[in-house]
Amino acid sequence: MKWKNQLLATAIFLIVTGNAAQAQTATKTIAAAQPKIVVGMMVDQMRWDYLYRFQNRYTEGGFKRLLKDGFSCENTMIDYAPTITACGHTCVYTGSVPAIHGIVGNDWYDRNRGKDVGCVDDESTTLVGSDKSATGKSPQNNLVTTITDQLRIASNYQSKTVGVAIKDRASILPAGHAATAAFWYNGDGNFVSSSYYMKELPEWAKRFNEKKVVDGYYKNDWQTLYPIDTYTSSTADDKAYEGTANGEKKPVFPHELKQFTGKNYGAVRTTPFGNTLTFDFAKAAIEGYNLGGGKFTDFLAVSFSSPDAIGHTYGPNSIEQEDDYLRLDKELADFFAYLDKRFGKNNYLYFITADHGVSESPGYYLENKMPSGAIEDKDFSTALTTGLQQKFGVQKPILSFANNQLYINWDEFDKNNTDHKAVATEVKKILLKAPGIANVLPNEQLGAAAIPDGIKSMLIKGYNVKRSGDFVVITQPTWKDGSIMGATHGTWYPYDAHIPLVWMGWKIKNGYTNRVTGMTDISPTLAALLHIQMPSGCIGVPITEITGESK
Image 1 (cartoon, rainbow, N blue to C red):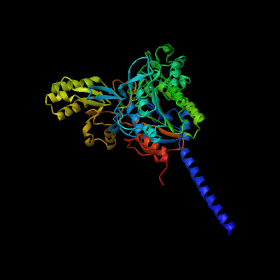
Image 2: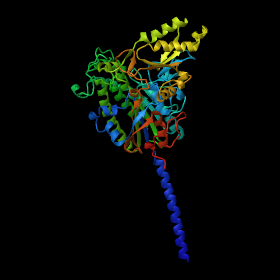
Image 3: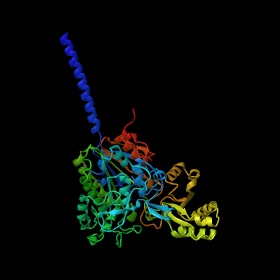
Image 4: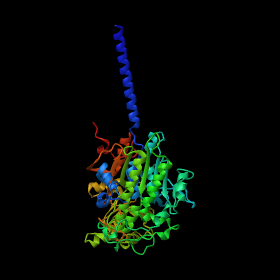
């Protein structure tokens, strides 16, 4: 009997210790089941079709690798209008919309202060990292938390979150309120930050700025990557509806940059080397902060601003933009190789998306017998101001026009006891005479507007009662204000609202979906993958093709 008791005791011991070991292993697995780093990448003005438009010339390691190894949400749409840079960057990282997060544009008219304000302006801060004293920037105008904030909260602020971009808003708004740091490119050749984040730049950032790497980019000018006659996906090199940049006389290759060496460091923005600069600084930030090297998941939010500058200037059908994306593809391949080597292929979570798309240039549409045009000032601003002055006897009827919205000077009208409905009627009457204007709607009455529900929903989500204007002006499809040259965005139309969204790396299986997903779904998907709380104003839902279906 004694040996039976000993055998039973041994069996119990083995079961208990085995279960304990299993529990310990499970705990270790859970602890390790987090990516070392999340890299969120946004390309400013990347329409969805750019994933495929130049695919026959993309390398195997860039966009092709993304589609081969990653998961593509092929029908991702922006949930609101206006489709503008600041709104897009905020939406991706908050899962929210302007009606809630308050970022209604790159700037807007502040009625309390009586002036236009920038989306990241903060007069209580100062610029850090530049010889020139200037006001700093911060995310204070964003009224909700970001996914990067939530990561910091979940780790008790031990995760590091860093934003990098050429544009200040493209760095600051994604990095979040509680960011470790945000850096953007100043016109003097330096990446800078704000006293909101730090008293002075870290040493690694100072060393980077001292190198003046942009001079090295300038030395060979901007030549096409391949023989120019092979750029068959674009229009001819010199089109009348292309704009020019940096004082050049014609929009043609080669674009001379040597002349800017040591002088004009801002010229890099409208060249593909703005992407090179951003990649180089992003790598420096990874190494400088040792992102992905700690106990908790870190987050690098990086945005590429140069495609937007190139697209606005030369248009999406230009050889300049094709060359820009071919170069971006090669640099993306190099960046993936860098991430693979530093973290391991399955140890980082990566996604790429855009803040908005873009329309073709009106000149391009007209050249090809398609409807388009430019809304001229005499038909819009001048006609409206003059008409309201004559009808109601006010001197300054309009305070501002921003983000396709009119801000009416109601104080002046109220002095004359003018009926607001009469003003609204006259505004609509005048503007609907203008070629290119499809509709004019009072923002506070959008819910009752006689327009399709999908458009109505986008406009309502883009309207913030404290910051938006009094009327939203809807242009005809493909029409642009100002001139037929260059290109722009900002509307609800698919060319502005249909964006790429591709995931790759940690826990991501290859595949795609054509189900409609929203820009607001990106943050809750990240929250679900990382098992953290979604941002405070989030209205999106997790993309279950990425997170896995519930059992």
